[in-house]
Amino acid sequence: MNPWLAHLDNLDLQWIVDAGIPHWYDAGIDVWLNAPFFVLRGQLQREDQWAHPGALLGLESWMVRWPSHAAWTVSTSVMGLLLPLRDAHRVRWAQALSVALAAEGRQRNRMDPLADETEAVALKFRYITSRLGWLEEDSNRVK
Image (cartoon, rainbow, N blue to C red; front, side, top):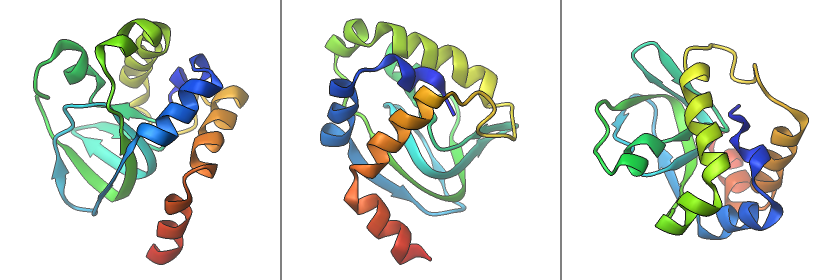
């Protein structure tokens, strides 16, 4: 799980819950992520890289305002939030976004999605998922 969440406060986490746009992707399809996408459930793969719950994808494209160079293949059905980050987030979330960029590169090569999980990151991830009623409803429906 990416440690970027540990650098956000509760107001930022609530913004993710309130402003995040839910997206679902079925297994086996390719997706191009050119805006920040926060993975809540499922797994994606690109070449030998993996993305698991807690990952923040598409951040590179958003930061440099350039389309992604490769698609992600959805390995298992994915639920997540497209984050409508604005330029103001570049300043307010600078530390968190820097951590996210650095960590994603390291963690994408790991099969273990929780290798760097800290208690703070786990608590903040649960804070977000517990406030998304549709996430639990959708999980129950998929089973």
